[in-house]
Image (cartoon, rainbow, N blue to C red; front, side, top):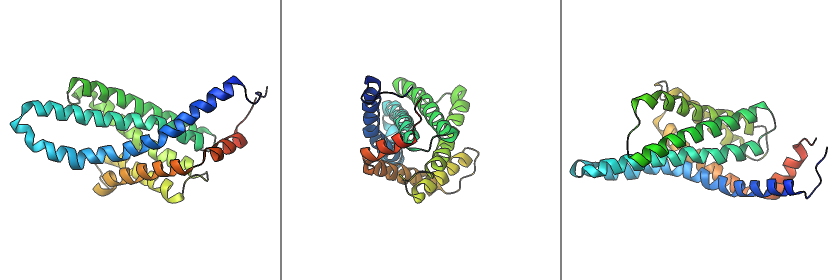
Length: 215
């Protein structure tokens, strides 16, 4: 049965997606900037002071965990929004659940670590390994899924695939390029955030309406 235009359900769904559409570019910028800022600015600046102030060690550990938490949770709204922009199908669905699952799970783990100012315990290292692997796979899958649509350039989606592949192999001790693993994240997420901001809402709605299946 076809839904009536202007129904409460349609309005609620539209309002919810408008909020997600506004959140996704912010999430992308946070995911790109925060890890590099932590690795290149915050940690190198404060780490030398830690031997002189033991309380700073715990503070740094909590801050590092919090940044990982924010990065991971930022993937969740991105995965949902990019699913909306992908061609309907199993690949897009797989990318969504992979992004939401890995992002929310890793975010929750590091939120608890930040709250307790503790490092990652050995009992969770295997799980963290799999979750980071999942993030890399999400980058690859979402890049492939987005290549089928008109919203993003082939260079952006291709970079996502390359960065994701680099993350996956790095989990097994093979570092393709240190610059790609660090700066590649920054470039892809920031570029993605800017691209999301430039997509008109009317274009997204009209494209989604044309591809949606009503019953």
